[in-house]
Length: 108
Image 1 (tube, rainbow, N blue to C red):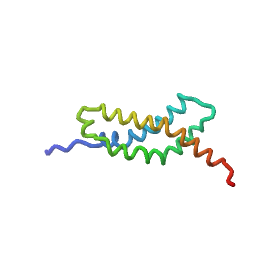
Image 2 (image 1 turned 180 degrees about the vertical axis):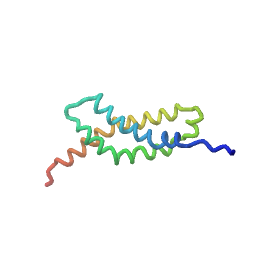
Image 3 (image 1 turned 90 degrees about the vertical axis):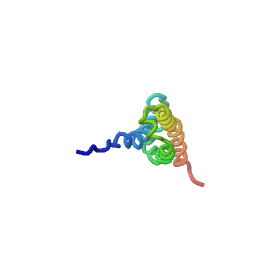
Image 4 (image 1 turned 30 degrees about the vertical axis):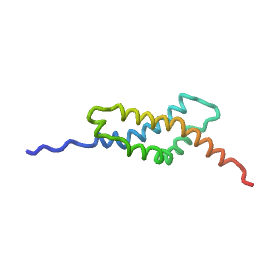
């Protein structure tokens, strides 16, 4: 009986799902840890995070080297996930506030 090749589901999960989840986790952490009365609601921030997440996370995924991470060198992978999470924490609130203020301004 021939041996089957190992499943790549583990690598696929950590390459495609964890970075996007880290971005949304960053949005959630920012909303819960740094509470501000003027910040937009979490639902609005999460909805605005969908297109921004695709723009921010997709290029970073291209730099991930899963072969290196799966062979035991996780430091680069964890650092990259941390950078993605930090982008979710910093960028999303500012972007949502700016877009909300643009929507409430009266046109001349």
